[in-house]
Each structure stands twice: as C-alpha cells, then as structure tokens.
Length: 507
Image 1: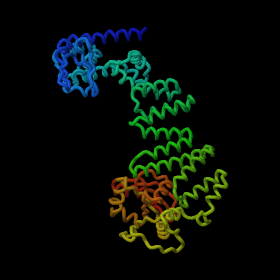
Image 2 (image 1 turned 120 degrees about the vertical axis):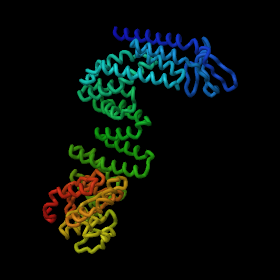
Image 3 (image 1 turned 90 degrees about the horizontal axis):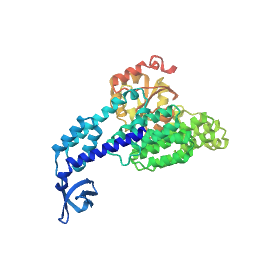
Image 4 (image 1 turned 90 degrees about the vertical axis):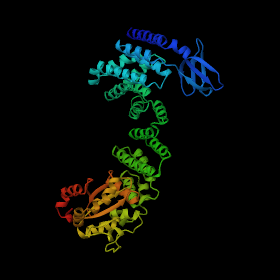
C-alpha cells in the first residue's frame, strides 16, 4: 500500500511539473524557438530535447526528429525571469523534487543558462541535506535498511527516471555498497549479493565490490558460471579493466585456483604498457607465486604448491645457482626426488654449501670467491674516500667485511625511486655517516634491474625502496634498516641499532 501511494504521489507531482512548464514556458516557446536547416528552411515551435545526434522539436501538435547534421542553427527564446520566479516559488513551498525536475526541464531547452544551473545546484544541495537529516540516525548507527527501503520504494519500477529520482538513486548508491559490505561481514550472503548488484548497477566502477561479489559467487553460492561471467563483464569496463584482471588474479590465488591464476597473469602480461612497468609487473608476479607456493606448502596442499612453484621457476630464463638451490630444497622437502635430482645434477657440493653472496655474484658473471682471492677492487671501491668502502660485488663485500670484522649495509637501488637517488647521492656523501660506515660497514650497492638485485630483494624480503638491510659477513640478515630522508636522521637510526654498540665480529 505504501509503495502504491508513493508512486501515485510521484505521478501526480511530475504531471504537475509538466503543467507548470507548459504554463510558464510553452506559450512563448511554441512560436519562439527557431531551427534553421542547412537547406535554408526554417522551423518554428518548441525544442523539446537536443543532443549531439538529433533535435526534437514540437511544431504545434507534431513532433519532428531532425538529425543534427541537417541543422545549421538553433535559436531558443528565453523567459528566464518567469521561469526563475516559478522555481523559487516551488522551493519556498518545500516542493524541492518538483523544483529540481522543473529546472532540469528548463535547462534541457537552454543548457548554457548559468543562472538556471546555479539554481538547480542549490536545489540539489537542499535535497541532499534534507535526506541526510532525515536518515542521520540510521547513517550514524550504520543501519541502512530504512533508508534503502524508503528510497528504493520511490525508485523501483519507474522507467525512465525523472531527474529528481535519478538524484535519489545516486544518493542511494553508496548505502547499497555499505549495506552489502556489512551483510558480507555478518554472513548474510544473499543480502550482500543483492545489495552489491544494486550498488554496481548504480556505479559500476567499484573494484572492491566487484571482488566481494565474485568471491560470493565462488565461495558461498558455488556459482562458478556467474562468477566467471561477472569477471568478464568487469574486465570490459575501460575504467577498471587492468585493475579488474589484477582483482581476478587475487581472487584466483585466494581460492587456490593456481592454473587459472597463471592464465590471468599471462593475460595481464600481454596488455600494452611501458617496458619499465612491464618489468615491475614481472617482479610482482614472480614474488606473488613464490609466496603462494610456500603458503600452499604449509597448508599441505602440495600438488597446488608444485604448480605455483614451477610457474615461479619458469619466470627465470636462466635460473642462477641460488634459484636452483631453492628449487632443489623445495622438491626435496616435498618428496619430488626425480625433480630434486635433476636440479642438483649440475650443482657441486661446494656450490650447495657456498655463500649466498657467491651465488649472487655468479648471477652477474663473476667467479665465486676463493680463499685468498685478490680480485681487483671495483671502480666504486677505488673511488672510496676516508676509508669508506662501497662495492657492487657481493663476494667482494663478504671478503672485505669478514677480513676487517665489519658488517655489510645492503642498499638496493632502483632508478624509479627518488628516495634511492637521495640515499645514493646525498646520504652517502654526508661526512658523519661516511665516517661511521667507514669504521663499521662495507656498503654493498645492488641494482634492482639486475638478477643479483632481484634475487637479494626476494631473499631478504626487502619491499621498500630503497631496500636497506644490515647483514653480517656471512650474508645473514640481522635487521632491516629504515630509510630517513635526512642524512642525520638516518645516521641516528643506525646508531640506535644494537649491532653498532657491540663488536661487529661477534654478530
């Protein structure tokens, strides 16, 4: 009964708007609007609507639809004062929805009328403020059912929606979203699905809600077909296309659909983008699948872990010794003896127990360090001043740190990070910091664009840029080091670490 009454009131109100419009606009407009055609012909009447493709004009009982290409000029007679007076009267009478529809109809005739648009925006703000006041308690208590029931009762079944109801629908959208998320958290999955669909219908560019809805289809309704169909629709949205594929990847991984996740990864990789961004994506996917394999291994889901792990392994065109060692250990832990033996076949006993730094340096083509090796210092070391040593050779850093009883400050550098440049150019030239590092550390600088840098970032789990960690001479990480944009601040952070208050050789 309530819905029927609301709809009846709406139709009466909207009919009233059209009566007002014709009363105050039509008598003048019927003979005032002029449409000049490209062939010189002139039409007089009332322009009902216009867009980029066509114009509809009422010539006095007959409506003509004209292609825009046939029209040379449109001249519309305005009667702003009478229209504005009528709009003000509706507002003063508290008929805000009617005023909003009325101004919209007038602006359809003359979309460039700044005064009329200003009035429309003022009425819009008043309607929103009134809604906020009416439902303030429910909004504050995060109880949205009354708001949704009231507004949807006015909107549902109306086609097409007049401007005032389109505004209500726009207002309602975020509360459908909040209600869907709340219902999902509370386990009310059908309500979560229904309200999510309503929210997405109003605003399709809600990636988080798309992800929740897809998970609902997969997990709670076991409706794979709807989930896949929904993902395909989302991926076609140009506003969220690439992000939608990333969402799909995250969902597939969370559901442990590894083979499907791999296919999604390949789709993402095929999208056109700059080379630097492509490299970043490859690194991201490599780390993602490695971590996924370890998670699945802990869950004793070995077959799925194997698929994820071997995809990670396949991303290395020429796996270095460290990667092969990790692979051999994974296969051995999980009983894949044949695979383990195949990986270990070319690894000598020395390589199996060698320093991580030796394996990292071999990835860059340098030979592993032997006892007493006198390999010449790199250019960075030759340019060192006041006992401050910086090198890009891991094996060399290990030898120097062990020989001098020093720690190793690992610095992962990437040209895309301004903080990396700040550390390399500003911090490492600071006098106080150089003196302290000269006494306590060897600085190992690795480029993240190199295999060595990427392997180090993965091994030491350094996700920030610049990546900074304190290591002992054997390559074991003692702690992450937090970057500070101020050289003095960074120096103070280093001094605060307990490793700088004891003999480095004891670490």
